[in-house]
View 1 (cartoon, rainbow, N blue to C red):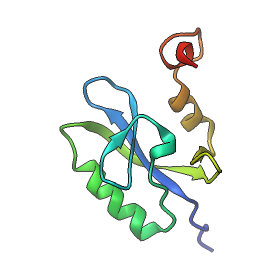
View 2 (view 1 turned 45 degrees about the vertical axis):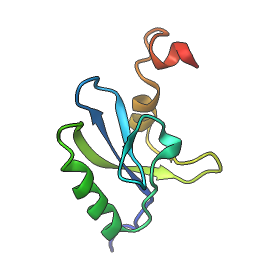
View 3 (view 1 turned 120 degrees about the vertical axis):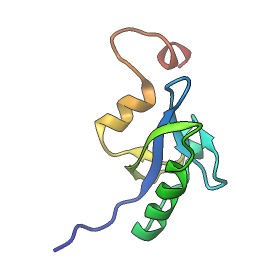
View 4 (view 1 turned 90 degrees about the vertical axis):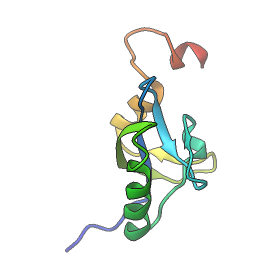
Length: 99
């Protein structure tokens, strides 16, 4: 039996800075996960991933990441995506120093 589809967002890394970025419903990239487009079916997710991955002048490594919907926007369901969102945890710098 096939696994049920879980909501996803398209994510990757900014080509020049290396920052984690997310694809929006407007077809742009954002560093804010709350602005990411949540995809609720496989066909739409595959199409958006294809569109996003073609933007090779801005991003690298685009892929679909599982998310759970919440009142404040998508929330990662896997620790890898949570880690990517907050950055390295060895000491406060970058995104962690701003929080």
